[in-house]
Image (cartoon, rainbow, N blue to C red; front, side, top):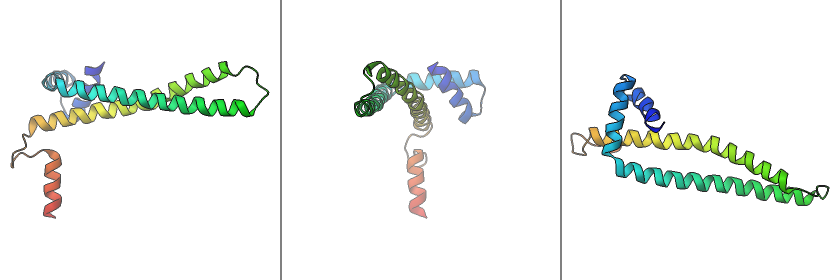
Length: 135
């Protein structure tokens, strides 16, 4: 799934066939395996913290709401159902963040492969800074 998703991204910015993009993406990810492992570890930790924060805030709000309404004697089960749905919603929204991080990493890897940082072949960010300084 991971290689497939990155191959679709590479197909978009390489304007090549899917099979060629898959091969290029695989080589690019193998060349940047340490960076990839670091990015994935940090990304997964941030996503985990985001989900925990969202579920905790939802559970806290639910406890406050159920404490104000004394009509409910058993409020643990509805609170667990609410937390489950908050996890589902958080997972859906944070999966977009996960895809964005993967695409940005792939763009970074392509830029570092194509441009070595020399004056004639500066990285994309440096080219933009030089262009802005010239204006």
